[in-house]
Image: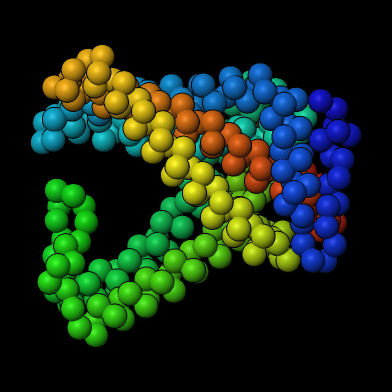
Length: 293
């Protein structure tokens, strides 16, 4: 795919924001034109770590050393996934980047990306603290086995207040998710650290509501696709392995879930990268720093 093809239609909007339909068209162009490289990166960074994680998790029993190993493997797989998303972002943002260069970029920009994610997690934690306290004050009890609150005995004004704050937090979370949609693309292409947040907020001006719609639609697709695929895979695995082969069934569903998640992650990452390119060109871009680390 030529650079002109990837850059065509970049100035997709006016002051009213970027048109999502045209961003999707550019996303399809990249998915078709760079499918080989994207598949290679998805296999290496997204699918294989997910399968390894599924294999160890399916064999681990809670409270055993293997369960601790499974937790470490899950953490490592998450870090590799982030590096993969950065690599895919590099490929989708610049037609001159090949798989090897993208991999180097992914690891080179990993620390700034992890720093940004850590900041987001701190913000989420700060919001969850008062919600947790309100739920407990209302009479809810936390079940460590399920990781959920038992709301059977919860009542009173504290519960109502917690529900209202939770709803506001959900709305704010959707808004913030839309505002940081091009965050990784900024980190990769402009080599920014925490300053990528301000840049991302600027690039999404006028497009926030449209991005929220895309995020909601994507979330629905992910939930439906993963649930349907794992349900079908689980039924087939039980028929082939027997109802008592819990570990085997969990492993099979883990493989299927990893495959579906990898595919959808590639689509989402390319879409955000192409949105970034369009918004950057509309916003009188600053020159890109070289993607080579």
